[in-house]
Length: 77
Image 1: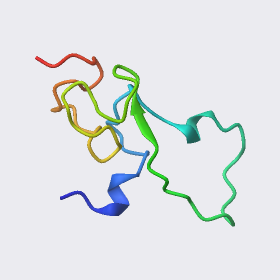
Image 2: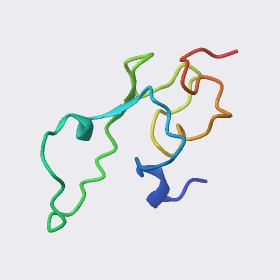
Image 3: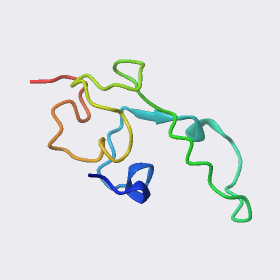
Image 4: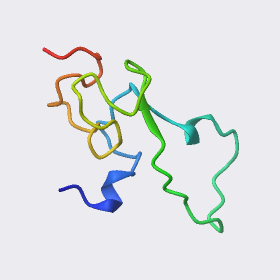
């Protein structure tokens, strides 16, 4: 089971380059006085949905392992 703090952490060193979230497209410096929303709106660029090519949820907690078949390539197998 993935801890909630790891589930939405986009600072994993092995985060798949195919994972996207709306925070990537906000052109503003983070404000430490504003709490993080942790809205969990993530998607895979290969499927354009919240489900990756391997049928698993596309979110940082799942997309940070190079052992995942589709990691970085979008191909399974």
